[in-house]
Image (tube, rainbow, N blue to C red; front, top):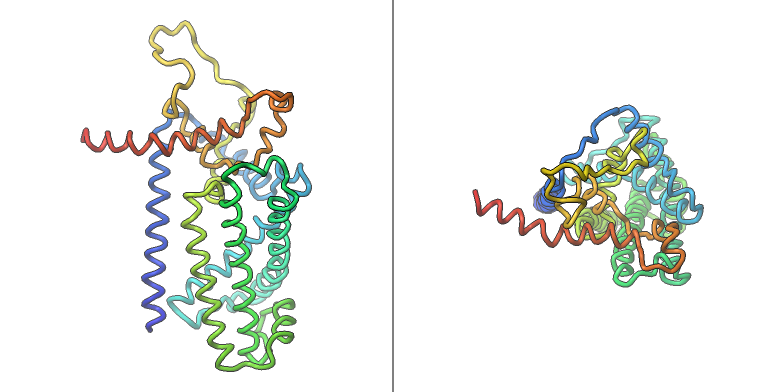
Amino acid sequence: MMKQIIFSIVFFSAFGFLFYNLKRILSYIKLGQPEGRFNNPAERIKNVLKIAFGQSKLLREPVAGIIHFLIFWGFMLFLLAVIEAIIQGFFPHFSLHFLGSVFTAITLVQDIFGLLVMGSVLWALYRRFIQRVPRLDVKGHNLDAAIILLLILGVVLSMFGQNITHIANSNFIMADYEVRPISYYLSGLLINSGSETTRDLYEVFWWIHILIIFAFMNFLPYSKHFHVFTSIPNVYFSKIGDDKYALKKLNLEDENLTQYGAADFEHLSWKQILDGFSCTECGRCTAACPAAATGKKLSPREIIVNIRHRTEDKAPLMLAKVGDDN
């Protein structure tokens, strides 16, 4: 019972703080100018499946694309393990075994992708800190990236720790429909038999897993990796059809216009502000920019990053003023 009480406090605190930050950022985005991005839902869903889930744009660059693809899909597959672990916080004996053969597929794929994600994280750390890929070597970005990558690594390692000790505690007999070949091999390699120590270790790994996940999701709103939350809606609301590459025309003959272009973030559309919060600051846009390639000081990345920074600086002041007026 004590475990459930402590977990309940941690759970509601973590999600309460997360929802506070999501609501805060949404209120910033809503300060932007209105723009219709709700037409043709079928084509928008198709874009999400192709670009967000299929990672089609990222895979144009094979090395970085494969790393991101494996981490993305690893996390998508780990979501079920996370949900199971969260429910176990309230009901300790809960399991997804009732899914039968579907559970078999889940456990097998999670086990394999766990290894692939660990390799991808180590590869990403190598590219950033040893190989020092120029577009990734940006002042002030390395700490943020290191924290995120190490948190991801912690999620995977703690998941394997849970699986390994669980198998040992079950006398190396996996439950019905459960298939975890890598965890089973590591369990036999590292542990001789189940004991009070392995049962305690299972609880330790369970808490580490949960706490890292809660820390990860609450760090994202303050990180350049906030795209974990915004990338799918950002793809959904992207331009489609004939307007995809069209620039918005300015009516210079409209005498009622008091503002041409954007002098500050609130003159941008809500979608352009969302773009700022969805940018991963990877630098692919600047690397592909013809003007930047000639040595000019134009950096598409800095433009979009500055939209987010300016929004975070000015939006709270605008919202506070609205609150005072009311």
